Amino acid sequence: MVLSALTDGITRSVEGMTSSVAGFFEPTLRLGVTGLSGAGKTVFITSLVANLLDRGRMTQLTAQMQGRIETVVLQPQPDLTLPRFDFEPHLSALMGDNPRWPASTRAISELRLSFRIRPQGFFAGLTGPSRLHLDIVDYPGEWLLDLSLLDKPYAAWADETLDRLSKRPEAAAFMAEARAADASLPLDEAQAQSLAAAFTTYLHAARKAGWSDLTPGRFLLPGDLAGSPVLTFAPLPKPASSPRNALWREMERRYEGYKARVVKPFFRDHFSRIDRQIVLMDVLGAIHQGPQAVEDLRRTMAEILSTFRPGRNGWLTGLLGGKRVERILFAATKADHLHHHQHPRLTAIAEALLSDAKRRAEFSGAKTMAISMASLRTTVEDTVQRDGAPLDVVRGRLLGSGKQAAMHAGDLPADPARILAPAREGAERWLDAEYGLMAFAPARMTLKPGDGPPHIRLDRAAEFLIGDQL
Image (cartoon, rainbow, N blue to C red; front, side):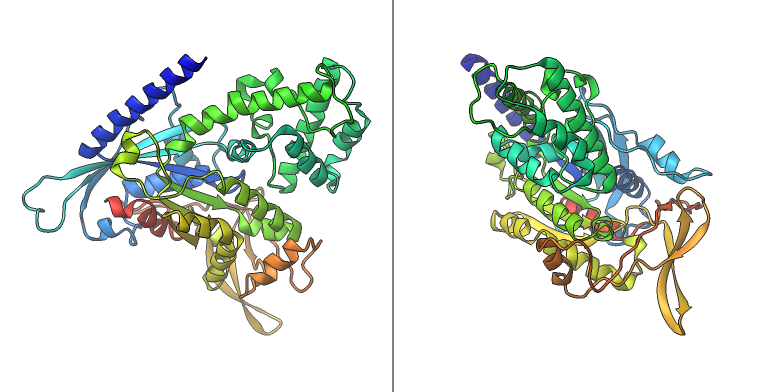
């Protein structure tokens, strides 16, 4: 086993050297798209790729405005073991005669864009165009949550999970079964399967209710691991004694197996190779759910971001096979649900929500930025009269009925503390404000030649994430 691990490490180091040497001639950036379920990862990638291919709306992308991007093309992804991101079907869903949201991410996928860039400066006339490859890596947000488990033993994870679940009505059935189980008794496989099934049922209900802390993520998207022992465990209270063959011991063994066989390979093979990262967050959705959902999102994102290795990459870093995340963009999505007057407030709330993680990343040498954005704009802005006073609203096509509707989501506070303080204190509802959201469908649209889909600040996001390399 030691020899195998050593050989595996040497192989990855050689691969790292090879890719780094190749990168001197044709640089490659790996962009990780991160976010919890419902944050809009699939739509972000689809709209980003479409707007990089047809750049008429990318006015904040410096290289485009300087006329230095000669062309951008889709290429086969370099990793032959990964599925290709379904860009064309997703774009057709968004831009068809009856626009609809594409299916959510259910497995890891990759897409490569290659840029042909005209050089600038003193040597512009002496050298030909350069190339940059952008590898966009998409993976389910549910898998991302599991990275926070790597440093947690089973006992700690179980205690924390049971404490949270005891306060949630969605977990009532599972909690009753978990409390009734005597974890000091020998393993009964039927009981273990029943506990795992009840826990999985809770996770699905919690996701539907808007909660963020849904570990282990593969319970929601098991794929070909469905029914395996590595997905047949659940959090249980630790008994006073736990013999070697006890139910609690077996739950602990399977939990550690899940980390070793599922979480660590994902971290090693994909997540740890990321150069740039965008973290998508449905901040508006959490605010709509209430203070406890906001605190749940803050805590979950803090755990996720603690797994990043932020900092600057040098040539030696690449040769040794290690990578650090050089730039992290925090993006509050669905900005098109608000009038643009409120976008700075949404940005401020997102930045405050992740302030601790943001400071740690900057201290390590990574550049960070927070924005509010909409990967695909689904609304138009309007002003209506209410009680004799003007009211800023957005109008869009309702999801489901297809009818046009106007919405005012509520006035976000200028001070983010008015959102974060009640959330940290465990308040059950907002005392002095009401926030509502409607679910909008993609709007029917006709694009001019050379234009990508309409968006809000997608070009600013692209400039921060890749602009320095163009």
